[in-house]
Length: 107
Image (cartoon, rainbow, N blue to C red; front, side):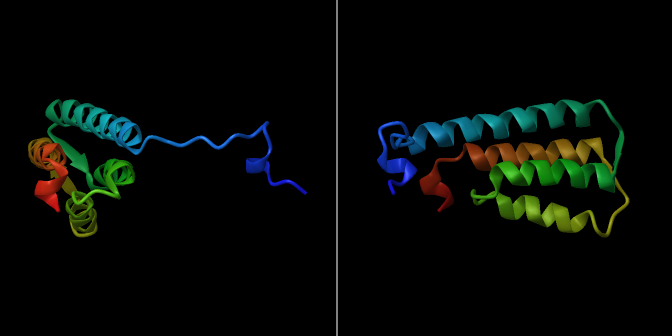
């Protein structure tokens, strides 16, 4: 029996890794921009709200060095009840700066 990838109906498609990474980075930037705008317009956020957004962010950066920074903040949500919009904006600025660095500088 032929495997699906061996038949003409299911040709193998080689994914361009750089295009895939570019699309992923665009998703990260969009997520950061949206959260930054929200954080700039609110005074405080509950720990659970921050945790939800951090999990969403972590899902987009989990394969990048900046994931450790997001994980540290996830841990912080376990011991805090509130986060200020100002500190979230500062955190997002740091994350944005770290993902904007060339890969050679982070590795």
